[in-house]
Amino acid sequence: MGVVIPARDEEQLVGRCLDSVRAAAANVSARVTVVVVADGCLDSTVVIARAVRGVRVIELESSNVGAARASGAAEVLRLGADWIANTDADSVVPANWLSHQLELAAEGWDLVVGTVRPDFAELEPEQQATWLSTHTPGEPNGHVHGANLGIRASAYRASGGYRALPEHEDVDLVARLSDFRTIASDAAEVVTSARRYGRTPGGYARFLRETLVPVPLD
Picture 1 (tube, rainbow, N blue to C red):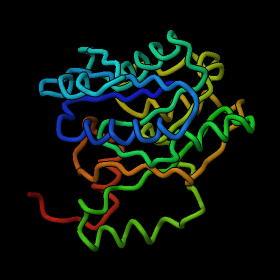
Picture 2 (cartoon, rainbow, N blue to C red; picture 1 turned 90 degrees about the vertical axis):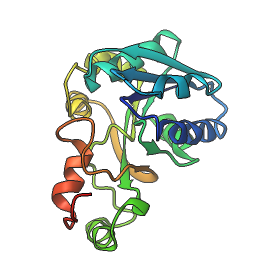
Picture 3 (cartoon, rainbow, N blue to C red; picture 1 turned 180 degrees about the vertical axis):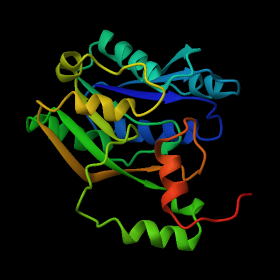
């Protein structure tokens, strides 16, 4: 199986992300190929990622998350992956992240839409309370997040893969997989950065900025 992680100027968080992915990989018997796609990075993201044992790094200058994910997926498929797990460089995956996806794949599911939550340590108490009030444990909402997505390789190929979209490339891909067996699950929830301004105009940062209780800008 393969893990695809797009990154753009994530020197502060990519190391934490890779540590969590390696811990998850240690809990499965399958061979795991981890690919970081450093897209338009001007910081030390590449240096940090290359220093992690077993991690492959691809450098792009597209500044396009769809193109970055597509490049990473192409690499893990080239290396023989039959399942593609997707997350983001500003996220932390749980120890059961990969094992849970493989269990669902073994049951015949082609697409796993996982849940994410913001890093509570980065939220004000009012923001955390607002988020918790709209999320019920055990009831995944089915929202699509590139930070927690798993796809069978054959389904990915059949869909045409990620398109070079500047954002919402994950939603676009899932929409084209409507004929495949899809399951939403919160059993391996990913924690992602709670920053209010992300690497794209929309995405999770915009959701947090516009949905949670506003706080003064720093």
